Structures are given as structure tokens and as C-alpha cells.
Image (cartoon, rainbow, N blue to C red; front, side, top):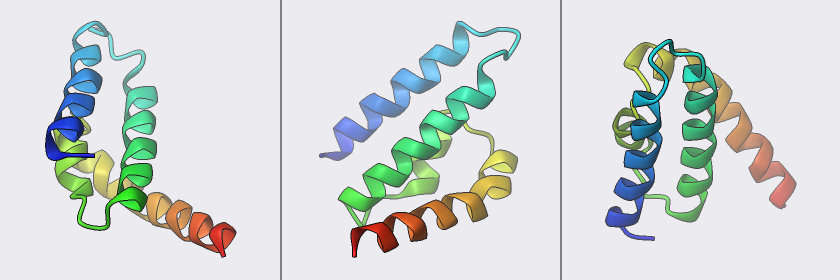
Length: 82
């Protein structure tokens, strides 16, 4: 995938936040963004996870709060791949 593809995906996630004025789905959108970031990072080691999450509209506090969980998921995936 290219940078343009990553930007397109992030924009689609961020755009969906506009249709959620009461932030009912914010956590779900954050989860989707993090899951996609994990998958995209597996596909491309040079993928900039933090930049992607910011482009998706995931706020910095949520990024830091969930970083440990994301790393744990990545390690778990790597173990399954062996």
C-alpha cells in the first residue's frame, strides 16, 4: 500500500467522526483505527503508526493510553505467526 492509501483510510475514519456529534462511536472508531494501524504496520515496517492514528482523529491521550495494549496485540500476532 502507498502513503496515499493510508491517507484515504485515515480520512474515511476521521470523516465518520463528523457524523457522531455526541461521540457515541468514538471509542469504536478508535478501536478500528488502532486495529488497522496494527495490520498496516505488519504489512509495512516503515508505517508511521502515530501519524496514522492522529490522521484518523484519535486524540493523543488515547494514543498513549492504548499504546501498551497495541504493542501486546502486535507481540501476540508475531507469536502466532511463528
